[in-house]
Amino acid sequence: MSLLPTLPLPTGVSWNSRKSPRFNTVTQNPVSGARPVSFSVSPFPSWEWELAWEVLRDQGLWPESEGVPAGENNSSLLKPDLFALQDFFLAMNGSNGRFVYDPAANTIPLEDTYVNPVIAGTLVNGYSGTTDGIEFGFQLYRTSKVTGTLIPVEAIDALSAISAGIGSPNPFALYLNGTLVDPSLYTLSQYPLQVTFATAPAAGQALSWNGNAAYVAKFAEDSIDLSQFVLNLYELQSLKIEQVCLGF
Image (tube, rainbow, N blue to C red):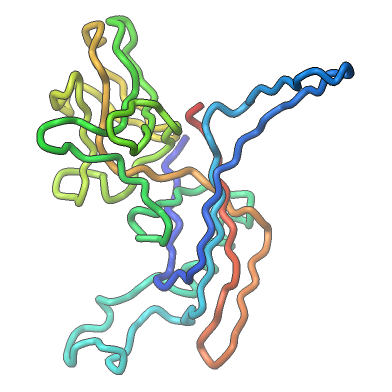
C-alpha cells in the first residue's frame, strides 16, 4: 500500500468526543434452549470516533487580537482549519478514501495511543510475541496498559508522526529481551505496522516495542454538515471516523 495521507484536524475539538471499540460476534442459540454458543470473527477491536468543532474559521491565521505577539509573522501560525478539513474530505471522495488518523499528533481528547515507556530500566510496552529462530517478520501489537501484563489488546496498523524518528517526543524503538535493537538490523513497514529483520532473531527472545500508534481509517459517512453561524465562522457538530483494520 502506498503512503497514505494524514487527516489534518483543526484545533479546538469540542467535548464530548466519542471513542468506541467495536467487535463482531456470532451467537448461535440452540433450539433446545441450552446455553448459547458465541465466537468472535474479530480478534481485535476496530475503533469508531465522533468529533465536533464549535468554531471553524474559513482561514487559518490567528490575528494579533487573539494573543499573537505584536510583530510576529502570522504566516508562520497557519493552522489547518475549515478548508483544510473540508478539502481533505472532498479529496477522500467522502467515505471512499483511506487515510491515517493520528490522534497522538493532534492531541485529540480521550485519545491515548502511547505505548508505555521504559520505566526505571524495565521495559513495559508493546509486546509482539517470542521469536522462534525462523520468522523474520512480526506484526506489532499494543498491550494492556495494566502494569505487568503482556496481553495484546489490538493490532497496530500505522505509526504516529510523532514517533517518526530520533528527536521526536517518543521515537519508535524495538527491543529483544529488553535490549534496544539497532535500527539497521530491521526494516519497519506500515499498513499494518510490521518489522522485518535482515536475519531471523535467535529463538526464545521477547520482542517488544515503544512508540505512538496511529490508525488507518475512513470517514464513516459520505457527507458532513458544516454550519455557518456568523461571518467567516462555522461549526461542525459531528465528524464520524471508522478504523479500517489491517493487522489481524
